[in-house]
Image (cartoon, rainbow, N blue to C red; front, side):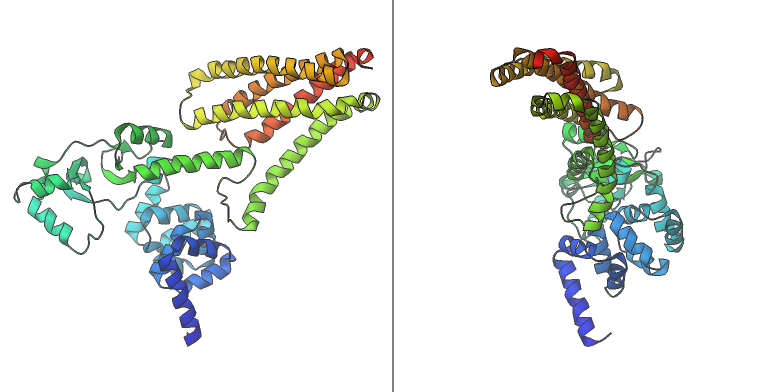
Length: 435
């Protein structure tokens, strides 16, 4: 490596050390092949840090450009849970190739983490937790804490027994105040733990209810696997909420504000085609009444108002229902009551808004029958919007799909078609009175 190239890599390493998140964003702006080439010239710790802060799907693409022998040392310098996120995003053949060259222990731990579903405690946990056997004395534990291998400050540690089964938690204050020859089993405190397959919604509930800094995670036999930070639980919940908002309107859930343009295109374009198809469907309904609109051009003035107000009412219902589903406030047996409540609210709001719209249309155009048609169409569309806003996410949830996945697009389709059909259909029936 030449002097200039060596200086360039030293500068990149410094950038990664000072601000790994910005370095990861800069790396994501490169083609995956170039990013892989850059990482091969960096120290393993710097390469691992950069991939650790990048999106797992991008990191997986970079790892796929490396040979398994080159990728394995970088992954070995990462925490097993972070390495698992990257390996999970690889294609099946590439995943097997990388797992084959990892150390047996790391490969076993990664394979175990790959079994945990999205949003579960096992997926969110950190495996590098501080734990000691119950037979150790206070003096022995303090000696280990003073050792160079324990670099981070800890407020407490976990006490384990045979086969690494979780027995309790050790407060550092209790450790300092205890007699040097006292064993951990005598000073440990009871601790609450969650199974590795616990869902995100339950974790949020536990974190808020018990006010723990960390929630220990155990397997089916009670063995300590790791711990989830309360901060990570809440951040994961917030992240999921923002993903749901993006997905509700057809954007990719994993997109970020500064994601590469090609990622934005690949995640958004398919749903734009879906939206285009639904728009043509709505246009097809309008075309059925094009002669009527030609005879009564005033209908075009109010058509947008009816459809737009229905869309707004639907989004109100949709946002409330999605929050209830995400926060685990709505149980399956509550679905009918939830939908009825939203329909009742939309019906009343539609009645009030419909009357106001009818009066404005009457005063504006001087035709009371036009006001009746506009008001009635508004009532019908807003009621349908409440039904769709509540029913679409509940139905998607029941069918096993993500309730946030482009619910906004499907909702808009319903409100547009119902609004157009109701308004123009009523106008067609009352045409002689509208001239």
